[in-house]
Picture 1: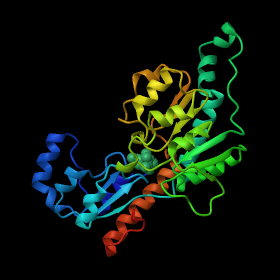
Picture 2: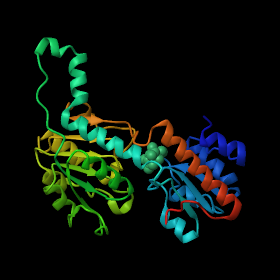
Picture 3: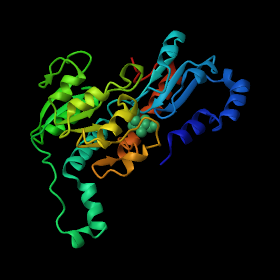
Picture 4: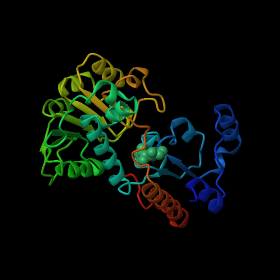
Length: 303
Ligand code: 8YV
């Protein structure tokens, strides 16, 4: 399969930014003013400094729904359009949330390790886990992905509630007025909120304590939404029963303490990582680029 990177090189003569900071600075000094479109991904984005080094930039085309690594404030001030890839990844990211949910509660990864270590023969039956069906699930960020997660978990007979900055219209789930209230009334808190300056550490030590020692935290959104140090401290102190994480504060670094915990499931930010969804994301990224090249508008602008 041709990657987005190959396609933009072949079709638009795109130039790849050098990897090292020194080479990048020199390259941008010389060529920065020649670019009017940047194609990037949620992982890298076009941050403040890079955006300033591209004085003629007109569009940022982002592979991924999250664009928290792009300086949208500067983009708005300078009239730079930004697109992302919404909706096409909802299913896979929601599936990943459900996979973490079932794994953390039923301890399937831990049980798999148990079999591989031959503990089944040496120690006998694996310890009992926690029932996954019928739980009270709180969704922090009932957006496109959050709604799909909720629908999936209705199939597990879960009672869903949520918190957003504003109450969502027309949804059948109870609204909690704050993240702490949501956590207090949930057995499992699932973080599905967008990253960015407004959601940094919304899940802080108070929220984690409110989930409680029998509760679980799942995060498939952005590492920045959760105070990772507070999470690690709560897990170490037994103030939380377990966690399922696809995202981290400083990817690909994962806190050392988490690696040793059998009640934590750790994924390497693979929420959208299937052949089908990545192909759909690539197609939408290229469609945004093609439309911008044709008429200066984007198919899926971020706002
Ligand atoms: C991708 C994601 O892994 O869409 C997002 O926001 O986090 C993931 O789908 C990422 O964008 C690729 O860099």
